[in-house]
Length: 297
Image (tube, rainbow, N blue to C red; front, side, top):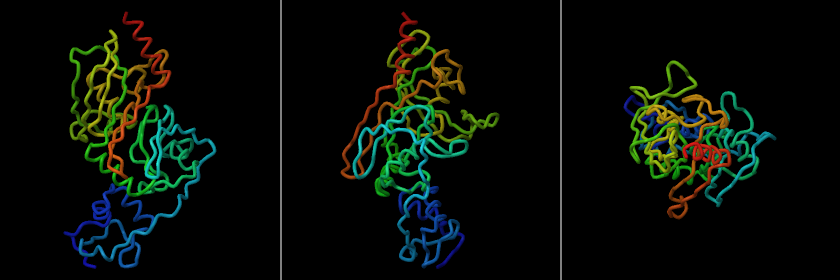
């Protein structure tokens, strides 16, 4: 096989050919599942499209990660042989990471005994997109590689629609708006994200649903999916989320950001039909809304 500086890396080539992220491609390569002329491939080796017949991707083995006993209960909104739509409670991390080794949504998925896509790695079974730990609401998980690739592509081309319920401080003169501000890691606090020159393009659209005097109820839709995007964008325009200590101020009653993924829309990978799912905000968010309604009278 010819390897030249002009040829793409194997991980880049594989991501493009299979319609997956480069991270997912590297996961497959690092697991020894990608063979080039019968030998395990290396992420950085150079390949040509002409060499496609010499590159094989082996089936992924069953997950080696074992679900812990403290896996949270799952609320499954819809499920079929392709995917499942989950209503995640606040306080649950989607997958394992630094400081979060048990009690994740991934643990709960593994505990069900269902076969999930492993394109994202065995520690991220079926995970197509994420919600912050303290954000509740809807997300879709994939059972098959085909479903995972299709949903990931919709996420990239923004046809996978996500709308959030958000309770923020302050009132608005306008009834709707768009926040177009790049987001990156805050250089002064690595636990935070911030609007930064040179950050990743980030766009949020919002609509005022209800004015509450010193607060507003919004519907916010994402055109991108950056970490803490809505929280950062609302703080940037000086309307931080109620209860968001990291980007705003503490609330005497609500001890989490008032943010809920209320609506999820996508094209089903199996039949191409549009699917729409909705979720009511949990009781603590409803109570916070009512408190501001009473205060605003």
